[in-house]
Structure formats: structure tokens, C-alpha cells
Amino acid sequence: MNPLSAIFGAGVAVRNALYDHGVFKARRLARPVVSVGNISVGGSGKTPFVIALGELLKKRGSAFDVLSRGYRRQSKAIAVVDPQGAPEQFGDEPLLIARALQVPVIVGADRYQAGLLAEQKFPSQMHLLDDGFQHRRLHRDFDIVMLPASDVRGTLLPVGRLREPLSALRRADAVVVDSQETEGTIRQSQPAEARIWHARRELRVDRVTGKAFAFCGIARARQFFAQLEGAGVALADTLAFPDHHRYVQADIERLLQRKAACGADFFVTTEKDLINLGKLAERLRPLEIARLNVRLEDPEAALDHLLITLEQRCGCRF
View 1 (spheres, rainbow, N blue to C red):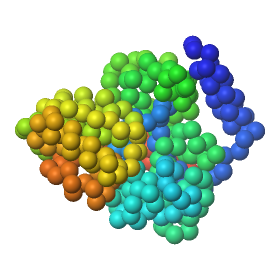
View 2 (view 1 turned 90 degrees about the vertical axis):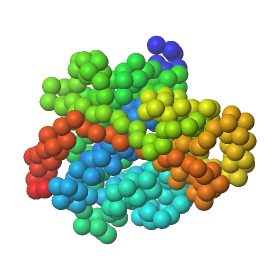
View 3 (view 1 turned 180 degrees about the vertical axis):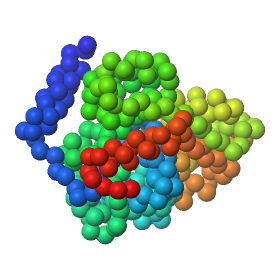
View 4 (view 1 turned 30 degrees about the vertical axis):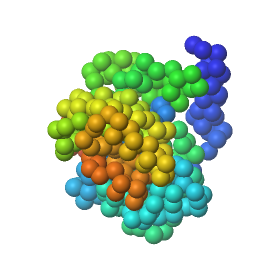
């Protein structure tokens, strides 16, 4: 292991040990907390999975809210997301979740305080904690970890993308994998009672005829471009911006010049980028939005596992 990664890993291990042994205390909300997280930096499909899980809960009639950090917000105040608001106010991913699910989404760096606000304002039965696996200051009653195949072969920060080693999966109640190979590799990292949930990622693009200029500001841009080609989109050129990039007029001019130079027929980007484009998106027409869906292979069994576990641990009925 690289010395820098070893130092980072030692720090992570000490912090986790302090929580595991009760030296650092996790604060508990009145209602159950279900965390959806990962062990790497960005791009594991957390937001599409939160939306997919939320849709399942809505079908069961379970009321919930979502607690999120609201990355790169201009304000540090705890706030209830207005679905028609701007990413500068609430963050791009909380806005995406609020628009997709039409449930309360509360943003704040202190997710405990965000949860208290949610419990004061909304009659939710549970909280979904977005990107919460490392946010150990808040007690969670069920931990779901997204584990793409690339994380199994990953390296710890700052050399690689991993926030924690695979051994951290011992804290998980369910691990979401997208391949049999990944499942086989992580079996030895999990306790026997943890479940493995199988999921498929589906990228939907309405238009696949003609040549596309693809651009995005997400964590794993190359993966997005490869998924587009896998969906049958012919790429004339591509351009990657930093993750959570907020577009300005100069970016639009650059994109239009690049599209003209390569002879593309239309632009294609992600739902998150559409939020960060705001009104500037109108200048990029025709613009196709690629939508990433995460589908559990046996969603009813997974939801039963989640709800039964919460009933056993919290004494709640759903």
C-alpha cells in the first residue's frame, strides 16, 4: 500500500474504533434512520438508489423524508429543499431527489439537526440518510452500502478513491452489488447476517440516432460516456467538467464551439448536469438527458428485509 494511503487508512481506523467503542457518541433521532452510502468518493449510484428506494417505500405507503448534506451549497443553514429552487441554495443532488420523489428533503451539514427539523415539520415514519455511511455522528438503524465493481479493486485516498477499506462493510446491513464477481469478492468482508442485494444500472436515452456531443460534471465521467455508447449513442466528442460543476456562460460558448467543430447533431448530458445548467440549458437545444435508473433484482424481498429489520430494532410498524 502507498504510504499516503496507509496513513489515511490508519486515521480512518482510529476514528471508527472510537465510535465502535463508544468514545465518540452517535446521536439518535426519534424516528428510524436508513443510510444509503458507499466507501468511495462519488459515482457509485447513491442518488439513483435513494430515488429507487423512495419509490418502493411510497408504493408500500411508508412516509419518509430525506436528509442530505447539500454539497457545495452557498448557505450552511439547515433548510427544507424547494424543488423549484437552485443548486446554489440546496445542492444539485438534493434537488434531484426532491423533484423525483416529491417528499421532504432537508439539507444541512449536521444531519442530526436536519433530522430534528424534519421531525418537527413532517409526519415521516423514517429518515433516508443520503451519503451517510461515514457520517457516524448520527445513529442509523439500517446501513445500505453501494459497491460498484471498481471499488473492490480500489485504493484508499489520497492515492485512490476509497474513503474506507472493504473491511468497513462489516458495518453494513445490506450491500448493493452489480455483478456476481463483486459478490464473491466481498463475501469474506461481511458478517454472516448482512445481505447482498443485486441491482442493475440502466441508462435511458430517448434519442440514439445521429451523432452526440456528450458532456457532464460528475465523479466518473468516463463511465458515463461508456454507458452512453453501450446504450447505442454514437459519440462525436466528449467533454468532462469537475464533479458538481455549476455552468456559466463561458462553458456554454465552449460547448457550442466544440459541437460545431465535431459536427454533432445534439448534446447529451445527465440529470444532475441539467440542474446545474439551469436556464442556460435552453442554449444547448437540442439537448437529450440521460437518466440513470437503479433496479433491484428482487425489490420486494429487499424492502421486506429493510422494514422487518427496522421493526425488530426500533419497535416500529410500517
